[in-house]
Length: 325
Ligand SMILES: C[S@@+](CC[C@H](N)C(=O)[O-])C[C@H]1O[C@@H](n2cnc3c(N)ncnc32)[C@H](O)[C@@H]1O
Image (cartoon, rainbow, N blue to C red; front, top):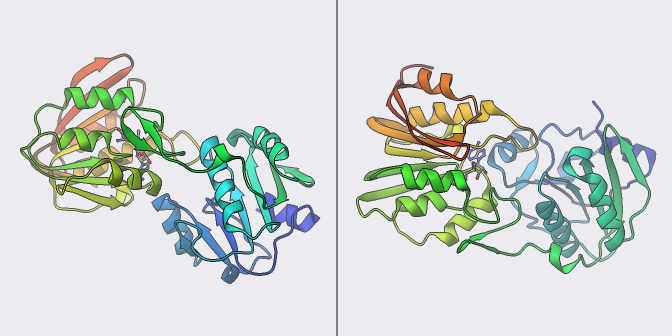
């Protein structure tokens, strides 16, 4: 299906320049009709999407690392991250070069358009398929759009990471209920490192593997944890392979990049089972309403609820059934 960007270009509402164009956080299935893939660089920090874009044959990176003549910003669910992407695009481009913005109503494109109109010289707007595409010449972005570290309960976070304003109550509950840790620990979907830092408080722990798909969050975790026992993996947890661990900790995500998706949490449970040593254990926290029970029973031989508070439950799972698919 032709994308809104393709249709907006065909209508003449937006124009991409000659030369290299960066696509910031593009959907992995973006239609590139009429664009020379050799002139594009897809910038994405979320590992599964980064890898899927690379598998399409696109040049990929995690930031704008070379001079570009234009940028297309795809609005994200996080307003702060989208603002930071636009500010980064404006800073990377020569003044006046085109910044194109594309986004869905559900990702807040209407309020983003309003904010862009207040800050930039926005041209005509192309509306299609519950979304909008528009462009403006690069100019200095509002100061508070610029990506900057945020202090969250003494941890460094950034725009676009999970629970950027402070410790997630579910993770706090997991840390309180996880019991004694020793040996090798894996933090699956480690975010900016809250659970890993809690695990590293135990002197019996010899290694904590932080597995996190979002590069921004993992970079925050690197700054939040200065402990030689921490090992950082920018990886898709659902495909992560390693020697099994004594303990796997996880507050699984319940969203893919754009929509609620309990299947992602289930994939985390299956990955945890694969990564748990035969005599090890996995400990999860989840919102009480999330439907993981059947997957937990399929993947582990022993499942108990350790605690249930304020809409969250902490679940311990042992005896991983690794031979099952
Ligand atoms: C609910 S958050 C928990 C974060 C952190 N453990 C905490 O307690 O604050 C889930 C984390 O999983 C990450 N994530 C989502 N999909 C992932 C994937 N396929 N592989 C690895 N991490 C993923 C998200 O970026 C997010 O940081």
